[in-house]
Image (cartoon, rainbow, N blue to C red; front, side, top):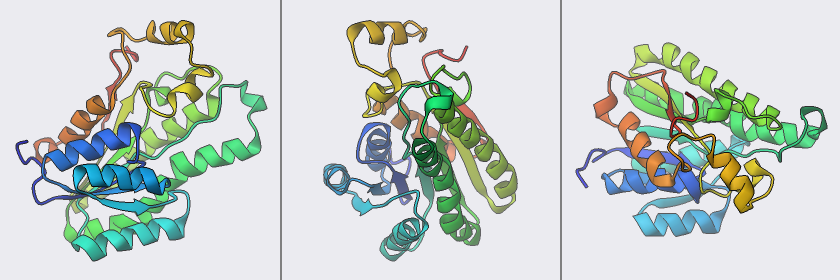
Length: 248
């Protein structure tokens, strides 16, 4: 621990497991006060207890729930320095025309609308403070799409474009906005990405990653820590791959 986020406050959505938990752990290790926000109350409480953070139940696709989360953070801290939009879902692999409308709506609500809702709630607070760092967790799927995950791919491409647009608009207010593009990792979504989790399917998936392994929560935590720290004070609008060379 070097205290790279000492005195900072951070909301991490979807932090009850996977990449979000890795990011929350890294932030807490470096001195940040962390709100572990997740739709799963038990998962949020477990990670919060582990890192000494605050648990908050949130449905990131619901405006009232996001506003409640934001108010809880302000009541606890009085300011929000870092926002990580990590919560995300996918639909099961399928031909694009066979994905149900309900699944499409759910993917876009959680992966795209959530970024709008958290921005609507938190950007005005960051503008008032003339500082802030927002990190959107996109995906290599938004850069180099895989077949049969069409609408998930599209939602992550949307997030990358939103990141760049937000960065340009918010730069004059001292707010930086970046994104991370992980390749699939050992998270609850892995089986959904692959369709089935077998040694053969894993081997095929891994063969597309030059470094030969999945992204880990620790990988994401380290990358997020850099982009949200003052070390990256000149970096905004980037969508950085954490993918072992998948997108080369």
